[in-house]
Image (cartoon, rainbow, N blue to C red; front, side, top):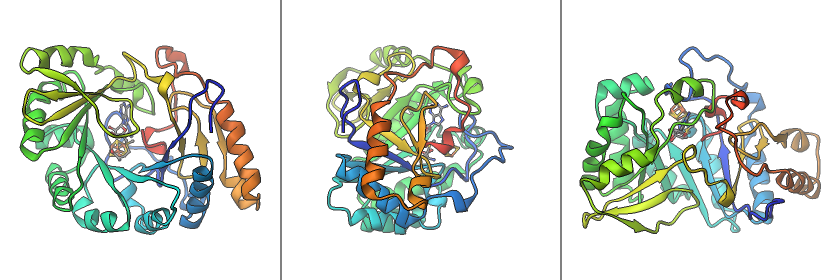
Amino acid sequence: MRDSFGREITYLRLSVTDRCDFRCTYCLPRDYRGFATPEDWLNPAEIERLVAIFASLGVRHVRLTGGEPLVRKEMLEIVERLGRLDALDEISLSTNASRLRQFAGDLRRAGVSRLNISLDSLNPETFGQITGGDLHKVLDGIEAAIEEGFRPLKLNMVVMRGINDHEVEEMIAYCMQHELTLRFIETMPVGLNGIEANRHYVPLKEIEARLRQQYSLQQAAMRGSGPARYFRVGDSGLVIGFITPQSQHFCDTCNRVRLSAEGDLHLCLGKENRVSLRSSLRQGDSDEAIRDIILAAVDRKPEKHSFDQPETHILRPMSALGG
Ligand code: SAM
Ligand code: SF4
């Protein structure tokens, strides 16, 4: 499946819920009430059917995300159903890790092969201020994932000026100690709090230059469907990555589309273009008809986001689309 710019679409980011047990300042306003009603979420059988259709069109990797995917009660059933689809090479999951102690083993057995975990601070107070959550539960969840053998295990840190940018070196030490991969992410002006979040924007070139004064960084290759640039840190074995949606966009190699919990197919995180697949499912359309709708939508995938034009700020919450 190719879009009109020749990009092959092999990666589906699937949001299983827009709800979350955290309220990260850059993602979800603390008093947000506009969540989708559960009847509007795709059920596990609908998800399985749609993913099978995407797989028949060439999607090979599905990432489960949210909101927080582990707050969805049917999460394991969803993974088990997707795990039975032979055409998929990989099922991965993005999580805040707050419930990972409880779920890590079952996720692994059900077929999740890779985890990405968000961790913005190692200071309990700062962590609480950013997320509203409990750092100790998250660190315990990360330990559970290590014990279950999730390797490589990637941590994602959104770097924010004046909030956690002084913790970069401490995060590096933590990841060296636990043999984790660490990826730094630039804030994006997306979501209900995106403009506010972007006041703390740090171009990651700045962090890279700072780290180069302390470590030697050798370019490294890393498996995955993402746009990060990776470097090996000295001879420590640690690999770090930089994800720079603002300062150096990577739209020309974009290989993904996104499906919201309510079954809306989104063609670009930074644009409003979308089409509802739930209505097709629930009105009884055939697989063939749904395939045609997906192909027509992919053909209209925008060339690039426009984060640099403030008037096009996207007002859907980031938690609805899973980053
Ligand atoms: N709850 C899970 C988690 O936090 O990993 C999965 C969903 S979350 C929306 C996916 C990723 O989006 C997280 O790594 C989060 O840091 C990132 N994210 C959310 N809002 C963002 C923003 N405004 N700018 C940059 N990254 C953002
Ligand atoms: Fe929840 Fe993830 Fe958004 Fe934080 S970034 S509020 S953990 S969905």
